[in-house]
Length: 138
Image (tube, rainbow, N blue to C red; front, top):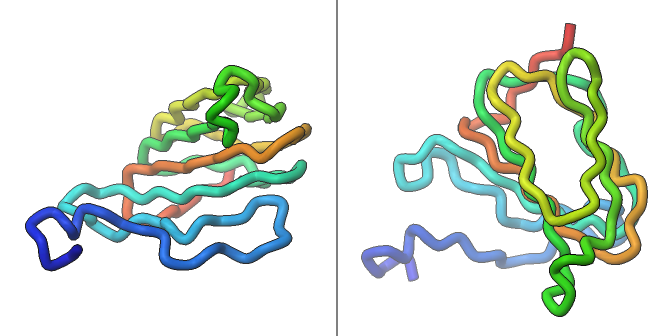
């Protein structure tokens, strides 16, 4: 569809991610400067407990963590318990419903601990930069 006017605005998954991982990345990581918008995104299907963003860190850009069920017949029952740590104080938040976490630039965050996974969930990381450069927490 790239030969149409807006075909370049659609990124389609063309191959599956590696099998057998707790967090299977989907082959839909955004394109640098796609449509002139400075952002990137990656999607992960989480199928069992795992930890992402292990070390606390911050960024010079805004970021959004999106958590969603993979069960469209039951969108309220999330199917997981995720502990998200925010701030220099290491404040812990439990995500047990579909949620979006806004992480403003400069805010320390991590780890993202998928403590309980009773059925697959979708985690999407959207950040307003072309590279995911992290600064270690101090």
